[in-house]
Image: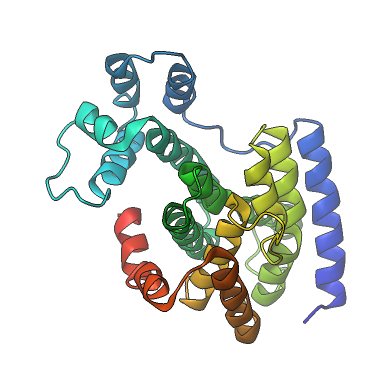
Amino acid sequence: MSTPVADRLAQEAQTILEKRIADNQLNLPPPPAVVMKAMALLREPNPSPKDTASLIERDATVAARVLRAANLVQGNSEKARSLPQAMTRLGAERLRAALVEASAHRLFESRDQRIVDATRGLWEHALGVAMLSRDVAALCGVAETEAAYLGGLLHDIGKPVVAWLLLEAEKSVVGTRTNVWIDPEVWIEVVNRVHRPIGVALSTKWGFPESITSAIQDCNEYNGSDRLSVPNCVRFANALTKREGLYVGKFDASDMDAMVMIGRSLLGIDDNVLSRLSGGLAERVRMLMG
């Protein structure tokens, strides 16, 4: 339920963040240097696997995420034991997605335990939507399966940014005192209300493809004129992930049931496919998180 405090905070947070994004003054954690260099290499016509592997192995966290992603590729029971082997298994598109994932995860990290606790649930939801979006795209014959993964991964990218601003504001208001300046429910309400326009502003500023920006902009309304599209895959995956319980905050269960039903009709998903998609989703997400 909306409150005057939440209304005021949401309006102020959106105004501040949009201005900082436009003015290049949003001091978020930068992507790891090895990710930026590896992504640049992968954009070349014939990227060198050896050079790319040499770059990635300089950052243990990024390398671990690439190995983990490779070992979760279906149909491979043998573990990848080296970066070149992992990169071969992933292929260029999935490798790019793993690198973006490593960068995006830094936005969900914090030194403040309250933000850590809250954003862990946000990251679980993002990974769940990403995995389902990719699976849905593949099952429905959508060519851009990795764009679907990234759209799912980044559809709520504005949430940790809003959370970060609220934490920054709290520190300036409260300082070293122990009292809390904002009720946790109001905190979540503000994050949920403001993150969409902030996510769109970030996506536009960072030059994401239009399909990803569209997925960020509206996860609650399907595009009936372009049924088998990346945004529709993300919208369906978002609703299904919420219904499976991977979400932070409140939502109307009947609305999510309706979103799943409409998405099934648009995308041509039957009961058996739906069961395969949702089965063990929470376990798959937590395995990916490590």
